[in-house]
Image 1: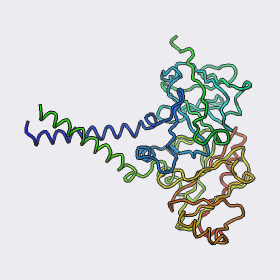
Image 2: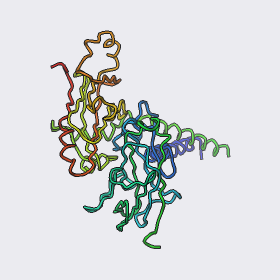
Image 3: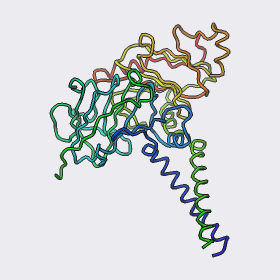
Image 4: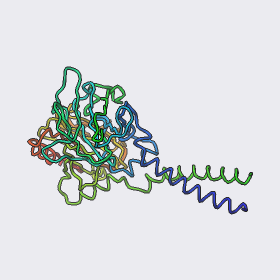
Length: 193
Length: 185
């Protein structure tokens, strides 16, 4: 193989590798750049002034409506607290301390970011005014089958994400959200158990 | 062997350059998807109000317990005023640059008497206005916000705890003044 052939082959491979790696970085930026807290991820650079080039590229290719840091913080979980993917065949318990936020909501989305809605009147989303709390903690049962206490009806088909949004977090925490405590996601029984 | 090493080094270094070039090119070549999606539905002249369950917009990251109002502004037409009236259990607002960066955000608790009253001007005007305070007075109690770019949009979020609040939140969002131009008039 002569030198010219090596250069041409190298450039073709480089173009393919560079394009694929850039595409992967942009589409998976939520995972690559997020702040992690247990199973929850938050892309802290989204919605900030002068974001880094990767975040800018993500923002330009994403249809996600940003939220200002003074408004609230969005946390996404695609895995439970043991690191296993969330799947619709299983029940889950979301349990933790009462969030240090004025208001919070919990919803279920597809892994592509689309809201999953249960058949009315069941609710596949909850907000903090609908949740029963103990003195310092809360517990939400997530299942396709009716559950006692706080119940989030799971209507997903296959893998899904939990999305928790804490509103007016800065009132209680520092503005970065670094001090925010997030709940555990505990896997329960599954359909094939 | 030397040719193989040479080829691998060339491939890796060229791939890095292609990767960096693509990452830097995307924001310059592609318009922010969320902005173009919203602008598609902003052609009618009606206030752009939608629920968090709306799938027609093609915008993700919406909360089903919220209703949204989006207003586009162009500071070439003059300062932009954002004023609310009415009441919902919780609302927040943010100003976005045309490229999607969040320039400013606020919740109802950070406003005076839970009334949104913001006056948006170009950052270049800040020094001139601070020297001529009378000129800057748009409306009583308006919070001045200075932004670096002429074009952008505002997003106002209103919390809807249950269906009984739908109409109230809808009225609240529809009655928000999103006004560009001569504020005194």
